[in-house]
Image 1 (tube, helix red, strand yellow):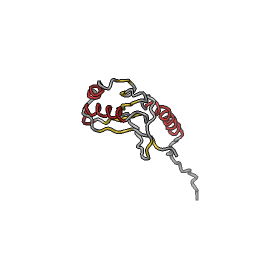
Image 2 (cartoon, rainbow, N blue to C red):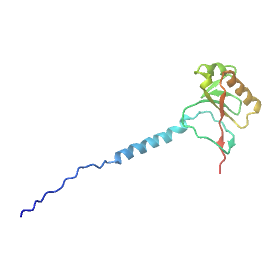
Image 3 (cartoon, rainbow, N blue to C red):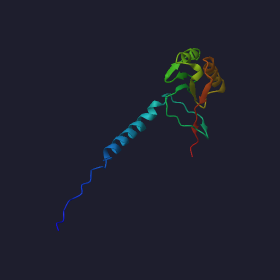
Length: 134
């Protein structure tokens, strides 16, 4: 009786995931470094609240600094021109505005910027805050 000495061959079905992990870690590092840059560059000490929603998409941001200067994204604007500039950026009824105001800004200045945004036809206004530090 002859015994056959065949070796069973298995295919190489395993995928080397080391390059995939390398690429994912590099992308994660890039996103972590560029995320703070994507935020509006105006230095504003926003008030603290208990509930804060994190945003990852680019949004239209109106900022008021401690000297009551108004900015649309990073560009200084006159408050009288703000409604026209906001209307020129698309359909105001579907637009969301994020309003960042320094905590030392008087409510009158804050209310006048809110009024200018509403004059543009935008009713969806979110106020940017930061969470309490533990």
